Image 1 (cartoon, rainbow, N blue to C red):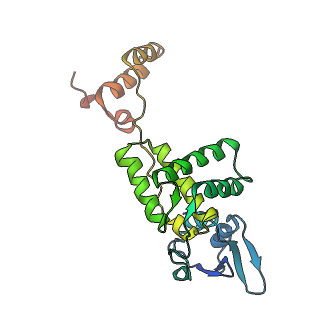
Image 2 (cartoon, helix red, strand yellow; image 1 turned 90 degrees about the horizontal axis):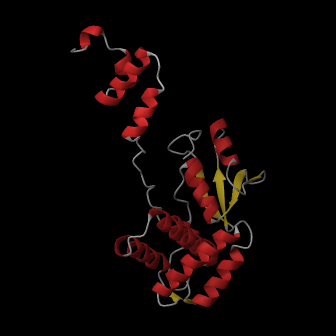
Image 3 (cartoon, rainbow, N blue to C red; image 1 turned 180 degrees about the horizontal axis):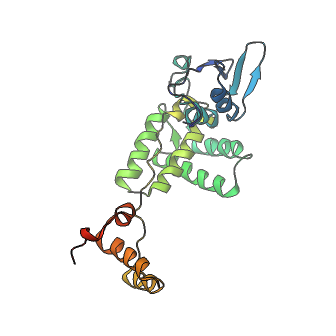
Length: 233
């Protein structure tokens, strides 16, 4: 959620006429957040902000305003009627059509590969519960294949596009969680690099400060506040 937007959001979001309508109380921070939403436009007659009901718009609503649920979604259940059985060839063709604009050739290739592997895992067809299939497939990637976080993220993004743009189920797509970003330990200097660094310090006081920092584990603020009587020499 954007730091400019308050929490919880006072914005009311509802589905209407195949779009997302936002009723926004006047607040400068809210207005700035709404203006960052892709595809938004003001309707002076209804006095609402109108957005296309797309995965990109829903992700932006979550990011900018903290909105994850929209009124009227109960009328869009996941059912056999809403999500027909579709073979892999048709799905991939429709996916390529959806990616003609706004996606680089490399992204199109990566997403198509991810969806092809998802369909192969599912027997070459989209089942009656695509979001459940997607969750089981993502669990398979993480727990059985032990793929990297970046590969997992690519798979989630591709399947979200499939659900939202090809199967026209953006509500299902928004329910797929993204993997947490990997946290890597910072790189540390080798002993040789530390020695070369100390050699560059010509002033005895500066060298002493750095040597204490390196050898004691004290914080910088603690080192600069040391007194002579604190040292056991």
